[in-house]
Length: 190
Image (cartoon, rainbow, N blue to C red; front, side):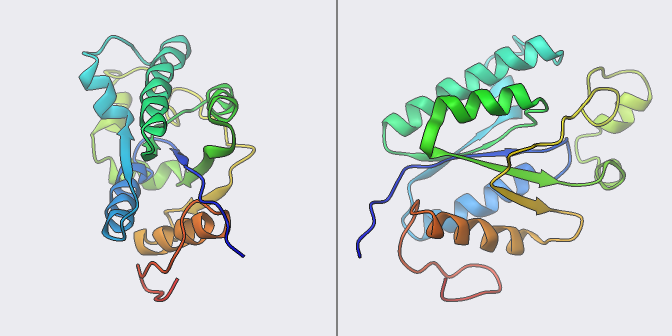
């Protein structure tokens, strides 16, 4: 039976330092190696590109995520799948994405404990938050609403990048977003 391949809008949500960008880059690279047209929308990069127009309060995050949503719309319109690595700390944002992208939307919760993220603190945000130099850091001095409807959960405290990539590829194959055999990570012959 031949199934039609659907475009995907994979939204990776999680607190700062959970591993969203690392996982997005690894996954996109591996999918591209197998001919899957995919791009990355990185929330931090988008903020830089728009010149810091938006802050980090809830209202400002809602506005910024509308920008990410518009970028995604253009990519899907041009038959380019995308992985969006954004904090998206509120269920309201994620629900908005799900409604907007419809059947293309896949929510991936990149779960990690605050303790692990503070230890990693790749961007130095947790240190700055503790010093009172950064406001609205989700998971620190602002809320991060646990996702209620994630399609995939990857716990980076216990799962490796390879494990995460394998889990996502299986999901994409099982739900007709990609086809064929893709050999990534520890498992071969997916």
